[in-house]
Length: 144
Image (tube, rainbow, N blue to C red; front, side):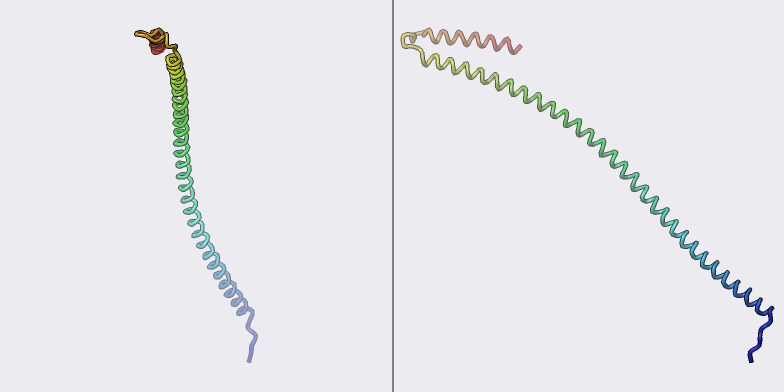
């Protein structure tokens, strides 16, 4: 039959149950602590990796910024060189146009000269040679 246990026995069971529950709770807490500790180590490692990647990226950005600045300076120099070359070519082109106009004018004058101006030393030829001499003298003084 069933007998009622004594108070002392019930108390002992309660203490045993409490000890088992407390031990289980401590075991659960220890497992949770170990998981949290592992997660913390993983997070610390991830942070260190991200920090290293960030530092590397900042270094790369600084390097590229410096390279960009150098490239912009080089582009500025090339633009200035290009502008001076364009200016020189324009001056040369204008000088060539003027020279071509002078030559065309001289040729037209020779072609349009009267037959009476023609002879052993035609006056038009004399005048043309004289103008060429003056023109060459003006160009020589421009070159110095």
